[in-house]
Image 1 (tube, rainbow, N blue to C red):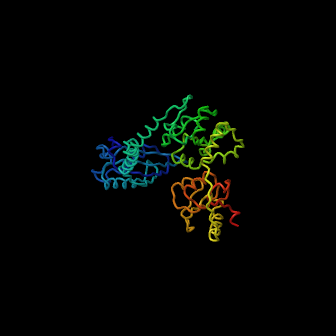
Image 2: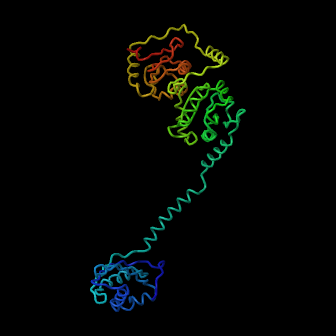
Image 3: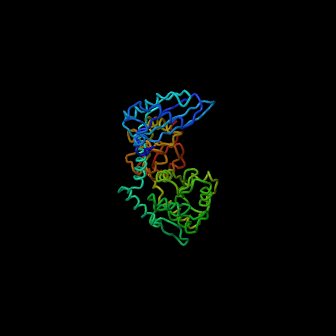
Length: 407
């Protein structure tokens, strides 16, 4: 008998069959051809249609349970819709298989092209996704890739120990100490060129000397190894600031955003020391003299100008704002009219002061340091109102107030 290639079939007739007895597959196929013969005329004779390839091979799947047979029948067709529907309807006239009563029920007429079309759409989506992934990058991606490659090439060796370092170590006033070469590469990738690697927990002598010449930030991994390196650094060197990667993460795997957040949140070494329970390292005598001279040069001049007296309005507003910021780690910036210019995190206060003008007073939840006071003097700030004060107010022309001063 003829057979339709699965590729050429347009429709498939799905039907179920129930038989009151035990029969075999050839019995069912014989009944299909025998009981439909002459029913639809010569043009729709199943045997002739199969010989010409318009009807494919009839598939019958049967199971016999408790003396009764049940199964399903699949008939592929390349006829048009109407002719296929007629063939399907004719199958429901089959009421006996051999000596047994039977019942045939059409389940559905499946359009094979719809299934093929769904496959084509699904596969096309996969191919398009792969094509877009492998396609040429746009101009911005090319620019970024080239810039990143150039930065990666800028890694150099510094000092007699040939430590991995960025290209601007000697020219920068501030230097970042990291743990290893991979950390320096990641910072270069993010455009930060003033990092140098310690290459271990022991601090090289050249780096100890560098800490006496530059402002140093120690940037370590967020694990126990990072804590051990900080202890070694703080016990042997003059580190100015400390920051760490998020807990459980290494600096070499941080994104650009995570790196900048960590650097913005750095803290002064003096604030970090109590957590590590370390004593301040003894500074060489020559360096003590140098620092003492530097402090004398930076020490504010004695001002004969009398400080502004705190009036009732200022006292009330300062007290209300200080109560509001306690526990928030935030800062309020006020103008001369005592209107709020803006609010920023305390950790970003130093950076903000360098970019905002006409600040009259700052009320914030945090520690007031001498560094912050120096910046305030440069910007002619009149009042600092803080929750924690470690600076003696007689060293500055700025009015420094705490909560007890506002009672």
